[in-house]
Image 1 (tube, rainbow, N blue to C red):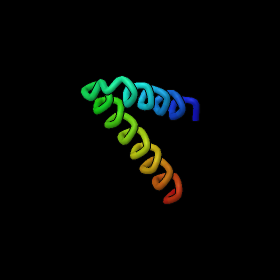
Image 2: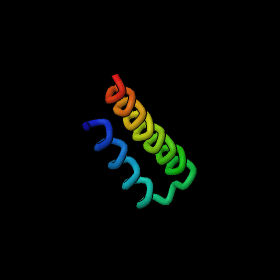
Image 3: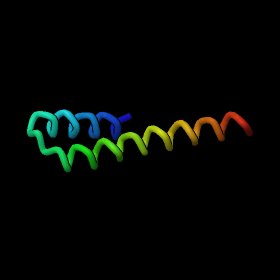
Length: 47
């Protein structure tokens, strides 16, 4: 949970700074991370 909070804080900062390249990078990382969690959870349910 702490990782997500850190990512959201970084996203918020970068929206304010309008540093779009870094924002895009962090955003794709956040999406990838949540996708990984979803995949991991669904694999766990199948077992």
